[in-house]
Image (cartoon, rainbow, N blue to C red):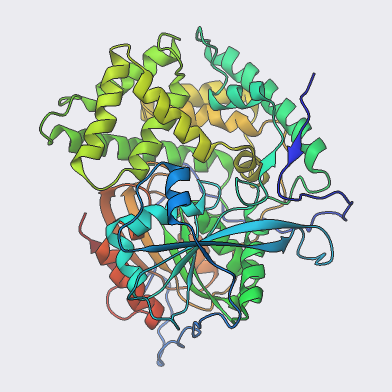
Length: 527
């Protein structure tokens, strides 16, 4: 019998009308991301010379009416099991946002926001709004920023993280059974292991069952958790603040939310900062393949970096050790770990690890111990990773955003082909396509046709969550909007370039102060 399902934080009791239809972008991304080119500075192919300087970007201002902030550094640090960031004030607040913005008198949900600032932050500074979409809670991403080198941006602007609707603290969705969650989290693997076909069948069944249960729980709002609806929560915040424009930072999948906002709310996006973005408008297959390739590169970078540290237990063959762990987990030979949960533990821990050698060594020790049969440390990391990246609301949101779903009969071939291309990540990425089997998805937001400010793209080439290939795939989006972005590349390890690079923070501060940026459109920051 299906257990009772609930939606926390006041999801609706009354019926609403149909979901707003939004037109899908026609810019699909193929398996080959194309040349490493982002047009900019009027120097890209096809640019039109201009005899006049570009118009300045809109002015950003401090809120006319702010939220009621409460200090929450201790509770936030405890929630995520991290230390309190030194010399940074962390405050929390919440506001109500319509579930469907076209029906403002209808039901609403509570959106959680977290603000970081320092003693140097000017009282009248315009806030920058950060979202990491459905990758993980934006408040967790903010804690990485507040503790990393990129915290330098806080001396000039407070950063306000908006947790995506449907995940814990922001209208938390609870609509799956324990068995469904466990099956999705393991991509269909049983404790004794399973063939690829058996995993696909088991995962497809759990996904379809979860879809039925979540639709039952959320009706008529089951399609209201996409990036477009998350963008509407940013618009509610802008209106609540009483400001004309928002300065927006989209980290990872949060870049989809920011670009959806720019498309749906036109000139309100006063600054557009895309931090290691995902490929907006791409179909499910292409997004998964780009992610597999990019995350594989990040893990190879981790193995190489670890090999240079004294006492690295992975030695000089870190990729081989990780492959060994995943192979044993896939065969059901590691207690408490599937290959999917082990990979999620490694990538999430690496993504959020402090920029210190001992943090990488701790992860390497957990991997090495698991390879020897002692899985306790890696199991703990997997549980933390699942809590951050696989709550029900995150899965609902990702399935809402799926375009061009892959047929179940295609997945075995993709598992085989992608595993050969990306030994650590290919199988997992292909199997994960089945997680949205049987789910309804909304019509995607059209790519913006114009932008009030040329974007700033910060691209981390070793991002363990989404990989670093999404930025290249945005070239058609920028061309469609006649935008000329500045791109900053960073070759370090971790999630969010801004959080980890004081160089990137300096470029962001310059961009926020006066856009468009002068100087080169292709830049680099040291790792």
